[in-house]
Amino acid sequence: PETAHLMFIEDEIDKRSKLYKLVQKHGFACELGEQSRAQLSRWAARYLMNAGKKIRNSTMELFLDKTGTSMDNIASEMEKLIAYTGEREVIEDEDVETICSQNVEDRVFDMVSEMGLGHTKKALQYYRDLLTLQEAPMRLLHLMRRNFNQLLLTREAMDRDMSAQEAAAYVGVSSWIYRKLTDQARQYSRHGIEEYIHRFYEYDEAIKSGNLSDQMAVELLLTS
Image (cartoon, rainbow, N blue to C red; front, side, top):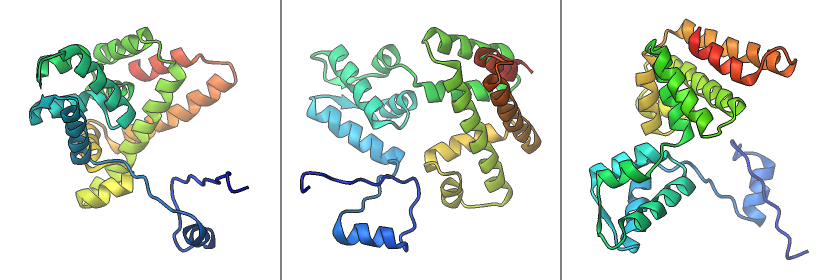
């Protein structure tokens, strides 16, 4: 019926395919890529301006470091800032530090960085904090595995001397995220990254067979 709409959602698409050309001819094809850091900054500044608020560029950088790239999360944290600052016009660094919580993905990223530096106690503290926030160990395992997969691709891009733009596309992240990954990748050897990835699959099998708990799997990765 005319009231029904059929939507195709794909991570990758071949624009030469018959299906893509058919959709483009009879419907609408749209690429919804991840926004760049600069785009997110401009969008957030307009959002705050419409609410009668101002924010310095340095404070915006701090804010985006806390929120990550999820626009839903950014909007939610901005609403908290707007409510917290009340009649005050300018949002300060202190407001961001007080109100905005670091997103789970960034906490896991920091945890993996501490692992690479050999700071086991700090890595475990990040893990305990995440458990306190009621984050499921299986989700943390997924995020850690994704991080290490990205590190392996980053290492490959670095070894092949790709340009920053080419490398970011190769890894499948924004240029800003790729810069963070290059710093993190220097804390690990390529062999070390591959070893961790192997262990993720090994522990996944052990969890599924009931021989290992998901919480213990994370602890083993952090401590050995």
